[in-house]
Structure formats: C-alpha cells, structure tokens
Amino acid sequence: MDTHPGLLDFRWYGGRLSVNFTATLGKRGPEPVERLRTPDDLSRWCHEASLSEGPLPDATTRTLTQARHLREALYRALTGAPGPADLDTVSTWSSRSLPGPRLALGENGTATLERPQLHLTGDLLTLVARDGVDLLTGPHAHRVRECAAPDCTLLFVDESRPGRRRWCSMDTCGARTKMQGYRARRAR
Image (cartoon, one colour):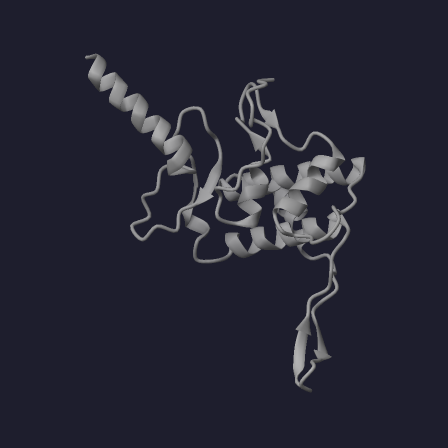
C-alpha cells in the first residue's frame, strides 16, 4: 500500500453523503487504498461527515465489516451495476428505524424542532443508506460520474448546469490532468 502523506485522509468531493462514503475505498483496482482500516476510522468518518456531534460514535469490528459491505453495495448501485443482493443491502440499511425529530415548547411558547442525537454508528450508516436511496431515485441519479483522471476512481455527483463535469475536484485531479496535458504538448 502506498504511504504517500494524505493518502488515507477522507475525500469529500462527491457532493452527497453516500457518494463520499464510497470514497473510503480509494484507487479501486489492483492496489486499492482502504481508508476504513479500523473501527476508529469509521467513527472518525461519521464525525467528519457531520453525522454526529460531540464525542466520536462507537464503532465495533462488526460494524466496520457491515459498513464496508454497505459501501460496496452503494458503489455498485451508484455506478449502475448493482445486483439484487446490493439493492437488498442498501434497502435493509435504509429501512431501519431511527428516532425521529420531536416538537418541544420553545422559550417564547412556540413549537421548536428537536433533532435526536444519534450515537451508534449503525444508526449513522442508516442515514448514509437513505441518502443513497434518495440519490438513486432522484433527479441526479443519472449524474453520478467517476473521475476522468486515470489514477482516480472517486465518484461524484455532477450538478453543473451543462452536466459535463469530468473530475472529482478541479483543485486536485482536474489541475493535475490539465498540467500533464500541458507538459505533454510542450514536450512535442
């Protein structure tokens, strides 16, 4: 595995929670980069994704295995190659029961919304799966793309008006690809 600094940092270029979750496995191919190596990595991802406030949610080895399984099912569904088992995995996670928002009496006597705090990583994975279902059945389902950079396999949702975005991030893959093209043209 490559030990390049930052290689294990989480990527947030996808534009959606579920798409960013698929980026926890990078450089898909012969030498993938697993960013969810330990239960602590999963807890940290949930925290960095703003799924939990306060202390890191508890993750177990079992939850880590389930998270990776969900991630791969989402990846196949988002790239248009899901099998029935993939759809079942995403649906099972998505349909799990979670505590819902509640109404409370505010200081001025009006109703206010209280969102429940979710602490278990399993609950947070349910939110990831629900985002995937929402994306796959919504208006941007046909706009999930894989980065065009030859050394990148990250997915992103193309929300550009013309729908021709090519890279997960113009600041990283786009700039690097354009610079390589420029250097190749200058070398001629």
